Image 1 (tube, rainbow, N blue to C red):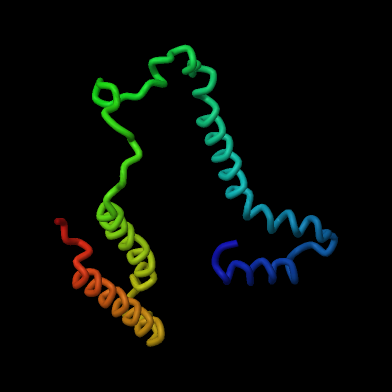
Image 2: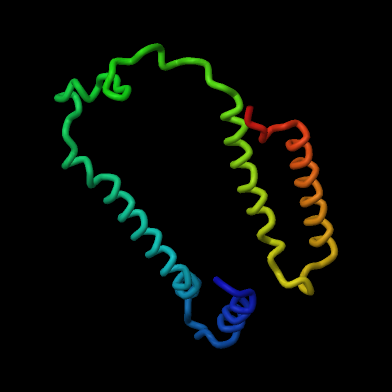
Length: 149
C-alpha cells in the first residue's frame, strides 16, 4: 500500500467513514485499487517482452538452407587443431576477481544513510563486514591472485 500511516488511514476509513452497507467485497476492491497501477505495469511489461521475443521468428530464415553457416570458422581457415584444449586457470581467477566486488557493493548500500540515523548494531555490523573484506583482499594479495605471469 505504501507508507505505514497509509494503512492506518485505510483502517480508520473502513472503521468509521465507510458506509455501513459496503460489503467485504467492496472494501476489498477499494484496497486492491491501490495495486491496479502495478498490475497494469506487469501486464504491459509481459506483453512487450513476449512481443519482442516472438517478433524475430516470422522474419528469421532457416539456417539449414545455408550449410556454410554450420561449418567451422577460424579466421577464414580450416581449424588448426582441437578446439577443446586445456584452459589456463588464471583466466578464471581474474574473472572471479572482477565478480567478487559486485556483491560487496550491494551489501554496502544499506550503509548509505545519514550517520545519525544508524544504530550502533548497524554500524558495528558494517565495520565487521568491511574487516572481513579487507582480510580477504589482503589474503588474495599475499597469495598473488592478481599477479600475471
